[in-house]
Length: 178
Image (cartoon, rainbow, N blue to C red; front, side, top):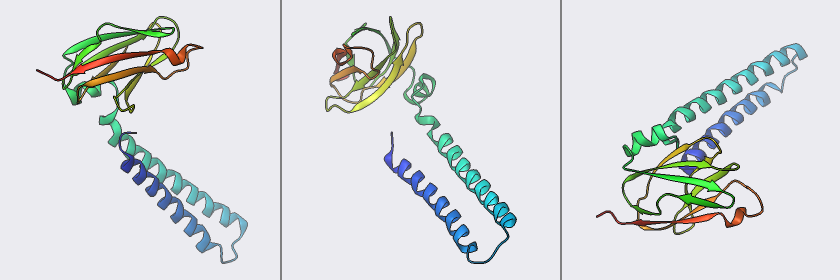
């Protein structure tokens, strides 16, 4: 959820389309209409509503493409990574190749797992989720991220992975760029 205003706007647009469809149905319900004609009319309204919602979904999808967390789109937004960090999940901990990082530069995290699915999530010093990616056995997910401020960041697993899931944390220390 990058921008709650966009989500709110989409919900308002969907509500407006729904209300318009409902108003059309209510406006036509006052007269006596044969059932077959009513069914055809309702079907047209349903198709219109479906088309309208599909158009809204397509527009939202296209507008959200630059914000996707995929490595390619993140590289295009942030520039090529200047540092690559490997992060390997094991029950119940993280093996991270480097825990001292620099703010302001794109960093690529190559994330994988040795056992089961985990989720590599980075939280800021205030406890807000910044970014996350799945850690899967036999596959490397690439997460490109740029820390905007120095501080101590926490890595947590967001995928329930067993009884020790809650202990699966690590720290990243991010220093100011020199």
